[in-house]
Amino acid sequence: MHLVLFFIFALFALAGAANLLLQKHPINSALSLIVVMSSLAVLYLLLGAEFLAMAQVIVYAGAIMVLFTFVVMLLNEGREEKTWGSSAARVVGFPAVVALLAVLASAILRAGRHYGTVSLSDGITTTQDLSRVLFRDLLLPFELTSVLILIAILGAVALARKDDGNA
Image (tube, rainbow, N blue to C red; front, side, top):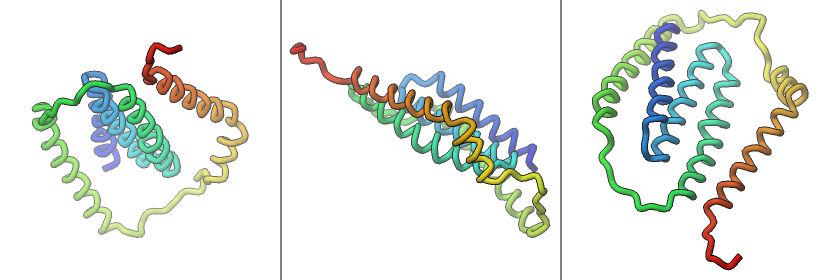
């Protein structure tokens, strides 16, 4: 079952990445990136890395994508045209959703029969070990990433500022 879920969400990640590159509208590209980040979070769950999966959803699909969407909307100055979506999304999307729901339903029904038989191994990394590595051993890259994101936001705001000619 893990292999089936892996292939489904790997295909979602690849399709979202391809859609990210093919979209003409930046907001749709940002939404495709959210699909990629969410699919990666599910792949982390399948690997048994629950903390990384939740961090992926909270940090990347949540906070970073809100910032990306804010910057895209800040820089986008044209009027939006109303579209009804792409026909490819309807043709591929509806069967994909039905297949995903069928796989998830079968996994839930199968897990209900074997509830309580899962055991954890002794080699699990705790959140304390992970935080020690992140905030002690990798503190410099962690802080440099936050500074880089701040510089990118300030640059986007500077680019989006209207120039009235009185410099």
